[in-house]
Image (tube, rainbow over the protein chains, first blue to last red):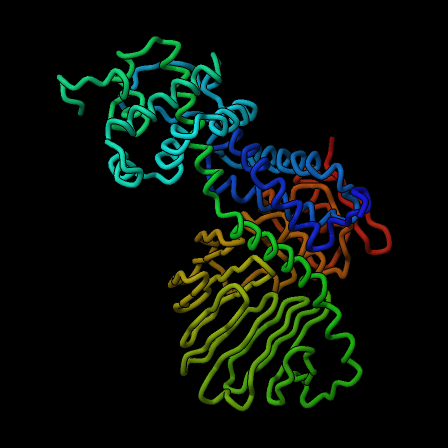
Length: 170
Length: 311
């Protein structure tokens, strides 16, 4: 089936589009708002609109279209409601007074972060994912991997240093 | 809190990212530039976690749910017109129709057309006034013991005191003993307003009890409560459709039902919140009163309305 003739109105094709771009759309929206409920709504509505316009969507241009719709949805909602923007909520003990814009999470930053995590050395990546994605406590990771608590912490520490070096200065 | 004599020079980042080390303590261990970079990384990792653990199956399901409710809305008007000619009039206010999906002989179905209003008297003397393009279904055999009706669209109910009276819609139910209330249900929008007595509403597993002037709205899963101006009955009974803080989409739906017009697929945002009203008698003034207040250009031709955002 030639790429250009794929019809997004067909459920198989639509599902494929969804699975291919869902992460990208999420990343795109999360770089604009940290309101999880709002982000979920925008992500869903963007795909619904793709389907509503499925007859005029060219398969090869779907990603662009998706991002444009998601962006428009975000802009329209922020215009009419009060939205929590992508300002980082600093922890209670911090004394930093950086302006919010400086700590904005750009989409490229999030993308680079993802790539950095994916290219971490295996032993560190394993600990990083168990801790940050699976939300496991270090002592539980130690038990699971059969290593000491200190070893787990060292690996995590190393992972973060590597990531800091890879990402560079913002 | 880290013990003072513990050597953390090769683990402090791990402790900090897991919130075992405070920001203040962390700040003392790194340079200013590093501190800011790590803070940004920490937030980025948080977002990364959300993306990685998001339930995409659930999201896809919700997307399909929204899509099918758009489909259902497009299909329903045709059902009644196909069988209308075969209908037999039993009494002035009762019309028997054969539904496509459910054929129950004792089911009584009352429906209104575009711009039409109808008063239905139920077997116990309770009254329902149906707004345009709406329908009311109930089982006449069961009525004495079980006062239960199904509503699509909008109706104002005047229920006689008696056994429990239930109104079922696709997005929620209203339960009363004897009272007056308005129920509106359109695909993902469900709204109940109490005019007299006490009304119990159940929607998305949440329960509310309303007294006069109270209103509860379920807009696509988001539930809010509000109040209206004290009134005997809803304004639409007197020919004025009024809206208080509802999405423009609902106003557009109401215009379609009152005037038998359809809107061309539009690119404008219909989730904009609208407060206002239109008269049900004159299409041109109704369109003006709605769209001129939200800065949208409209053109009407052969009962088809085209909308465009004002530049």
